[in-house]
Picture (cartoon, rainbow, N blue to C red):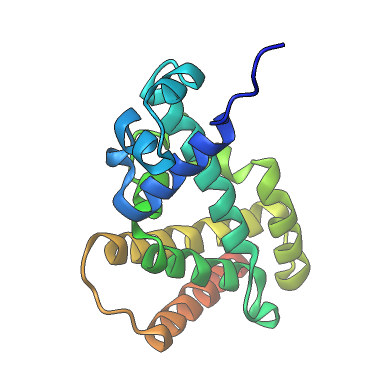
Length: 190
């Protein structure tokens, strides 16, 4: 019976995720991962034929982490999309390396904005929004897309620059974007 491997695939992905989080995804390689795990590079290369495969696995872990972060809404009474938008911006502040890995790398490919809007994971958010603001699901998608693009712009500027974060100012701008998107959707139905 073969000996159980001491360094598991999950341990390698966790180490790569931590490297991406603290140092940036460009620093994920067999040497940095093996150093983090205090092992040789052999287990890394055994579980992952290429570093690209390892980065994809770390990306998937970062994506799950990001989704959980977004859904931890401080004040649900203000609206799910408002809370998610603020969390999206906060994520860029607190996790700039992961934000860039998730949204400003070549790993975020193969998905159009329209495909993203139809993703299964987004359905509960859109339905909750529809209950809160009314209108058709198509109107709700337009509201979501407007707020998402606004939040992404803000988050990108913060993640890539040393812009000082002002929570109250961001909340005021998010509220305007959210309210404006709702009013625009209501105007379109008249």
